[in-house]
Amino acid sequence: MAGRSGATSLRCVGTDAKAAEQITAAGKKGTAEAAGVGARPVPAGPPWPVAEGVDGAARGKTLNPPNARHTVAGARSGMVRPDNSVVLRGNEDAMRDDVAQIAAGNARWNPATNRYEINGRSYGVETNGTVFPDSGPGIVKLDRNEYAALIREHPVPTPVTDELAAWLADEDVVLPEGSQDAVRQARVYLTAWEQLTERMAAGWPPDGWYPADYYREDLANRDKLDTLITQLPAVATGRFRWAIGRIDEKFKTLTHETTAPSVPGGAAWWWRRVPDKPGRASP
Image 1 (tube, rainbow, N blue to C red):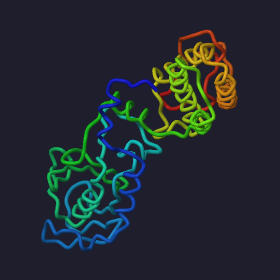
Image 2 (cartoon, rainbow, N blue to C red; image 1 turned 30 degrees about the horizontal axis):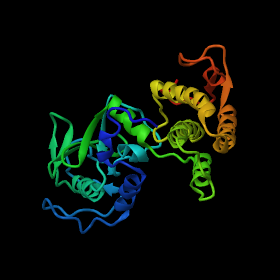
Image 3 (tube, helix red, strand yellow; image 1 turned 120 degrees about the vertical axis):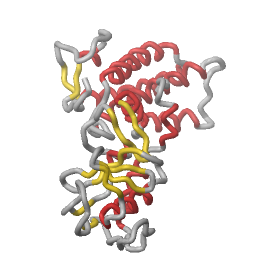
């Protein structure tokens, strides 16, 4: 997929499924030995029972670590908000310890902001006891567009394209001189088309949401693929048509025809089909 402004620069955020798993795994460790920021002993968890006498939103609750949606690519549900706090990979243990310290009463409650402050970071507590990161070292704020860019970065499988790539890499496949660029570009468009289909099949991971302009661009890439296929060498044309056909059929099983296209665009059949299960903010 051709790069978009913001997407490449956001790769450094490092939010991926492994980070989400680490938050959960780190939280499973006993935290009785956590560093004692305050005088009160730290309870084992998760979940962490809040000590008596703790002020603020955590009072009387049992605390859970931040939801995995705060590691965008590990998210599986949750509203896409105008301002999203995301935990940078590598800070999972620190977040776990902070939550344990909040439960112990070793964090400072700021009634003006409704946040607990500890180790330079601030946290809120939801009514169900789930703690969410707000700001500080290891936490970044992403606006809606940046969040969307990270959604695009979420990896999806491309088995058909991978099979085609393996065939192209075979030492017995010889492409005519001067055709490599067209074949390479066709693979880019094919990958984008399959990624869209796989996202749709998986329910629009990681957050059940897909921006309408991304969807429109994916359909436009299918247009480009249709044009480029006529420029490929004969040795590759058949394989590409096979791959396109496989992906097209899957796309059809996940969509239905409509007389009112969800996004404006071309005249090809894929523009006249809409997802059976659109994302919350997808077309």
